[in-house]
Image 1 (tube, rainbow, N blue to C red):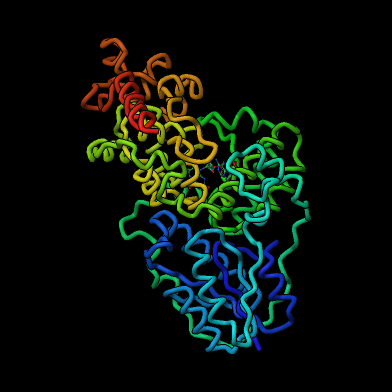
Image 2 (cartoon, rainbow, N blue to C red; image 1 turned 90 degrees about the vertical axis):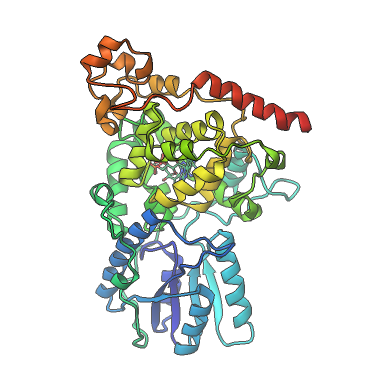
Length: 473
Ligand code: FAD
C-alpha cells in the first residue's frame, strides 16, 4: 500500500523528516498539499501576501518533485475531510506529515487521528518546522514557561544538535491521482500589487538556501550590531522561508555556526529560540491568538479610531519612521524588526487602537505572517503578553528614528517625498523651519501629512488608559 506525504508549512525536500520517513518506508509515496480556505475558528485562512508566497513555493516544490518523477497532488477543501478521502482513495497505510503548533492544525490532526483509529492507516507526525517539540520544555514544576530567558536556558540544555539530512534521491511514485491546477487556485492577486514582492523574494527551497548562504558569507558576524539598523541589510530575511518551511531551523542553526564572529552567531541563534518560545506559548495558550495573555488587559479602554487605523495602514501618519515601515510592508510584504516594534507601539499606545487590529493587518500583508510569532510579538509590544515589554515603556518614534536611522537612509528609501530634507529634520519634519521645508519641497498637509497624533499628548493618554486598568486590579 502507498503512503501519503502530506506537506504543510514544510515545503522542502532536504532535512524534512516526513519526506525522509516516507522515502525510507520503501512504499510508493503520494505527495500532497491541501489548500484549506475555511476561516472558522480555530482555523485561520492565510492572508493575501501569504497566498502570493504560497503560489510560488508550491510551484517550486512541484518542480522538485517532478524531477523525482513523483508529481505533487493538489487538493482544495477541509483539510481533515480531504486527507481522509485521499486515504480511502489510495488505500494508504500511513500519512506522514509535519507537526504544526497552531490550534487550527491541532484540531485537524485530532479529527484525522480519531477517524483513523480503527483503520489500517496511521497518522505519523514528524517535527519538520521546529528545533524542538514545544511541549517538551518545562519548568522544574512541570509548567510552561512564560519568561524567555529561563525558557531559552532549559531549551539549550535539552536540545541536541543534529546535522541536517540531505534530500532523498528517490521517491517511488504512487498511483496516478487527479490534481487541481495551481493556477486555478487563484492565489496570485488580480490587481498587480506584487511587483515589489517579486523583486525582493525568491520563494522556494533554492531561494531559501541562497539567502542563507549570502547571510552566512556577509552578515552573521556583524549581526549583533547591524540587526537594529533598518537602513542596512543586517538581518537574514529568512523569516518567510522559515515560516513556509522551505528551510529547516536546523539547517539555519548549523550554517550560521560556520560563520566567523561568535557574538553574532549567539545573538542570531537566540532569535531562533524566540521562534521556539513563540511556538511553546501558542501550544500552551492557544487563546493568545486573539485574547491578551494577561487577563487584566481584557478591560483595556481601547479607542475605536477608523481614520487613525487607515492612516496607519497606508503609511500616512505623518511620523516618518512609522510611515516608512508601513510602506515597506505594503511594498515587499516584510518589515524590519526594529520598525515592526515602532509601528506597533504607535498603534497600541499613542493611538490606543487594539493590538488585534494591527495583528490582522500584519497577517494579511506580511509574507512571513506566522500565527505564533505575530500574536506573541504584538502582545509583547502591547504589554499584555508573556514576558512583555511593560505598557508604560512607550517608544518615542522620533528618538527611535534618530537612534537607529541617524542618516535617514531608511526613511528616504520608503518616503521619497522627504528625500531632500536634511538629516537633522528627517524624523521630525513638523519641527523643521519653514525655509528648510520649502527648500526640500515639503509642504506639510499636502506633500506629506501633519502627524495624526501629538506624541506628548498620545503618550499621556496611553498612560492614563493604563491607570484605568491598574486601578481596578
Ligand atoms: P532575523 O533577525 O534574521 O532573525 C532570524 C529568524 O529568527 C527570523 O527569520 C525569525 O524566524 C526568527 N525571529 C526573529 N525575531 C523573532 C521574534 N521576535 N519572535 C519570533 N521569531 C523571531 N516574525 C515572523 O516570522 N512572523 C510574523 O508574523 C511576525 N510578526 C511580528 C509582529 C511584530 C509586531 C513584531 C514586533 C515582530 C514580529 N515578528 C514576526 C518577529 C520579527 O520581526 C521577524 O521574525 C523578523 O523581523 C524577520 O526578519 P529576519 O528573518 O531578517 O530576522
